Length: 417
Image 1 (cartoon, rainbow, N blue to C red):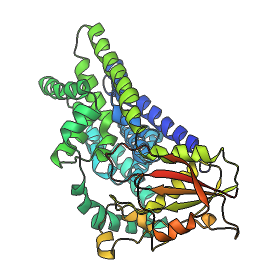
Image 2: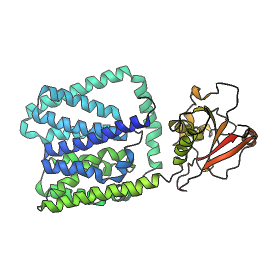
Image 3: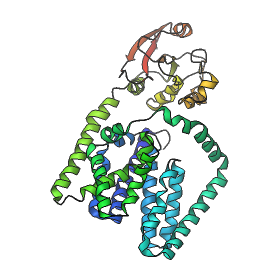
Image 4: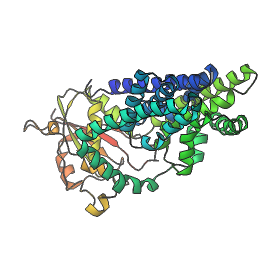
């Protein structure tokens, strides 16, 4: 579908909807209809999760593939048919390839095998052997095909990403009592007591990933997000114990309803106040102007070390004008190499401007868009000279004053027309 924001959001939304369905199916398969229905519904009780659906990140698809692998593996071990066993190998491989953080979480697969001891150890050994062999064959083919890419990614993971995990993390209080509805988290904690009292070994399937998060002190919410379906099932497991179903239904509806209200009027409303919307509004305004091309100038970021040039392709998402941009290292010099090597924003500096942003003619553009970090940022002498003969038409200066990286957009038009 090309560079289509609507297309990407459609695909990610389908992944999220698929995860809701898989959560329901997993809860129904392991326990009953009630656990499945509550579990799927409670995924909507996580405002943070709702804000991630429109983004172009790998987290929502990874959550889908991880949940898919758990569900299909449970069905494969339970039924033991060859097609399901082979399908389990495929889904586990897809989960392994979705994101490296799933490798730790997929340690739940051996638990699924052990929990189903009633099928007999010989049958379980045969079924797990087929799945294991399938995964090794499929992963072996992928590694043989893309060994260089995988090796570089693992090297980057070990040398750069793992040491950087401690630089930015959220507290468990923030994640489980703010980003997730408190009823979900409280019910999940209560489910531990209930499962221990009932001595239900199947509970380990949904509790294992959250246990790993606590044991390894994984606090960055992007890495815990993929386990949210299991958290929802833990909460559903507790709510199932409420004998008066009207009360349980009421709690679920209150959780989902209030989370959607918070996500819509709180989270979503806040996102619309960030300086990032200036780029969106500027792109929409440029579409109304009588010009085929627009020259883009980016000024240094005063409070952030992010490469400001990354704002150019973002602006391109919201306008149908031909953008012209030539990077000027004198205006935006990169950080020193030793600082950049461990910087959390190093990839913004490894970005290189696409060739189609190069000027295609010598005629100056009638429109110039200047992306700055503040409304009163001083212009470098070379930029001030470039803007002679241009007048400011409109300025997009929305700023929430929270994030260090800000994008203020000023649009200039040639006085001569």
